[in-house]
Length: 169
Image: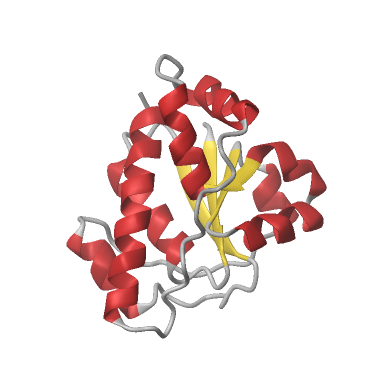
C-alpha cells in the first residue's frame, strides 16, 4: 500500500496534524504517517493542535511522536515537509529521499498541473514536474497560542484535503 510521510520538527503539531487529518479523510487505499527531525518522542499531539484536529473531524487519540529514521523515509512513497529547512535536513540525512521529498505546499500546488493522473502516477508526475519553488513554509505553532495553531491547522487542512482527494482518486 502506498505511503505518505509528513515531517516537521517535534512531530507534535504540524506533521501530527497532517497525518491524523489525512487518515480521517482517507478511504484506506493509502497509509499516512508522520515524524519529526527533532521529535519529542512519545509525546501526544500538542493540545491546541489536537483541538483544531478534533474540530475538523480528526482524532489525536493514541498519537505518539516519533523521530524520523532512514527506515521511515525508505518506506514512504512520498515525503512531505512543512519547511524547506526540514527538507534540506532530511535529504542530507537520507540522500536517497531527494526525489520523493518536497514541501507540503509545493506538492499541493503541483496537483493542479496533473488533472488526469491519480495515485502513484500522480505522485511521480508532480514530483517530476518540479512545481514553482516559491511556496511557503508552514510556520510552527508550538507554544505560540491558539491563533497560531488555528492558522497552521487551516493551512495544513487545505493542503492535506487536496492531496488525499487527488492521490486516492
